[in-house]
Length: 349
Image 1: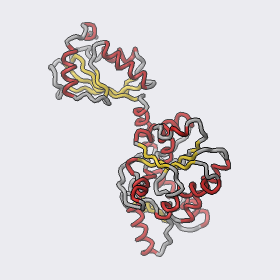
Image 2 (image 1 turned 180 degrees about the horizontal axis):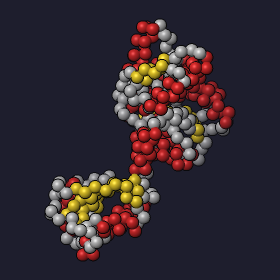
Image 3 (image 1 turned 30 degrees about the vertical axis):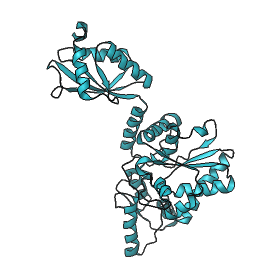
Image 4 (image 1 turned 135 degrees about the horizontal axis):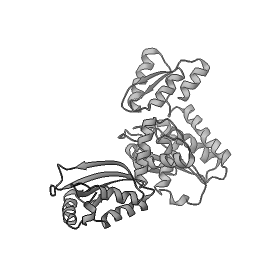
């Protein structure tokens, strides 16, 4: 995106090769800057291979977005600016994909203020830097579909890895739910839209992976806002689920008129909002006068969800929260037993 912008300003034609997982907002923004955008490859390494072919065919100059020495040096200015703004920082937590950003920042920090702890964070579904550290050299890693699509680089840069390897103090891998929760927190608290990759630094802190930083000054570069609106909506929902504010549960009720009314009444009284509700009859292993309802509800926090769950059970509705480990057969047996104890008023409209 930066290359496309400066290409337009200087009148230099730019061709950008992106993998199929690239956010549409990034593709559209590059095209608006006048760049020719080519979509090729399942991930950045395959896209790079296609870009190399274009260089040979069309006589272009290839610029690696994270491994060219000048790019790494440019990324280091982020660390420089961070020191200017927070000269007394104790640590900086940096998202890691191809490792160019953390390489540049690490050089600046260890040169100007060596006592600053440099911590890298990458998604568990694409931990290419961590794999390189284990192997002692750059290796091809496995890339999964991650919310941090900007960090989905299966092979870190050679120059970046050699530069960062002995300057990065700690590496952390975060899961998808923490990334989603970090994006949600930044939307709600900081009022800013950050893509999954840019939010991984916060995700590491939310997972309490850096307890040694509690009470210290920590810098989090929020490097990236290229996230499609449709994806943002899904990420926010996953963040709500990870935060315990969006809950799925299964409950067994009578299939006679008014059977569901009792559940919805309890949810209303407890201040829970129903987002989705689905009936299951055909595959229910209990009597034919029962029905399972699968609900998605919104609550204020995890404790509120626990209270709602307990009230449903107290009122005679066998309920299984979807993240619990009870097997379906066990739940059906429990439901069948408890349904015999349902009070008559629970079955009336």
